[in-house]
Structure formats: C-alpha cells, structure tokens
Amino acid sequence: PNAYFFISGEDGSILRCNTASMKLLGYDRAALMAMKVFDLYADTPYGISKAQNVFKRFK
Image (cartoon, rainbow, N blue to C red; front, side):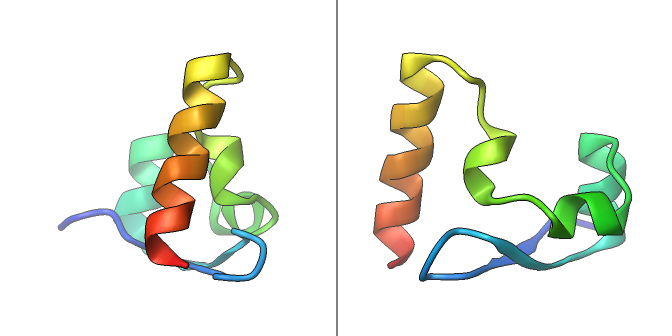
C-alpha cells in the first residue's frame, strides 16, 4: 500500500496517516500526528523551501 497523510490546510499539521506512512518514516501514529508536514523535510534551505512549495499547492 501507498503511504498517505491528511494534512491541515491551515497550518500543515498531520491529521491522519496510514500504516504504510508509519513504516516508511519510522514513526508511530502518535508521533506523526504531533508533527507538521514541514517536519518531514530536511532542515536545510532547500528542504524547507520544498516543504513550503508543496504546502502552497494544497492550500
């Protein structure tokens, strides 16, 4: 199965995720749901910029 997330359009928080996303990223459900989509990108200028661009497309 494919990994998927439901993301809040307001602040990028992860509202729901499936088991495949937990296995792929190595986090349990509670940890993922405490994150924002930006937390899943590398903490580099490119990673942050990429996360912001992805988030803008879904707003």
